[in-house]
Length: 105
Ligand code: 5GP
Ligand code: ZN
Image 1 (tube, protein in one colour):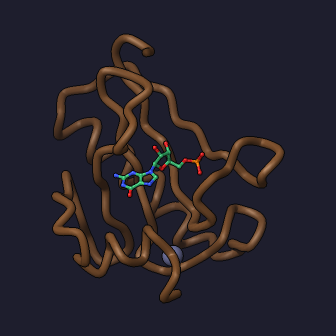
Image 2 (cartoon, rainbow, N blue to C red):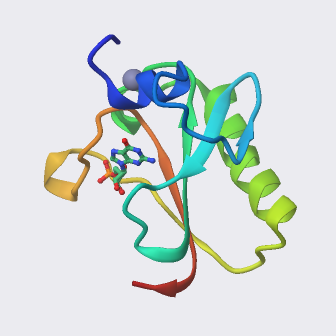
């Protein structure tokens, strides 16, 4: 999707540093962190939201990504959030999982 900010980040257009990446997803810091650690797990595939994703394997890979990243960073306590739809606060319409740890801002 040419007008999708997360697709552009995945494509390397902004030189965003990836905390972790594999064939399915990339992980980078949220630009406006709402906790001491605020990461976004983003599938390489452009899918607007959880409502549009029916690929069980990819869903599993994304959650495994959460586990790998938090384990790599030594984070044992964290929240995961998936905002789905405008009324739930979704602002970027490319599926992503928030990882929030530490003090909430
Ligand atoms: P949503 O409300 O859609 O679940 O969350 C979107 C998140 O993406 C927000 O927390 C926002 O700060 C973050 N975000 C929006 N644009 C960018 C960007 O260009 N770079 C990064 N790293 N994060 C972004
Ligand atoms: Zn996208």
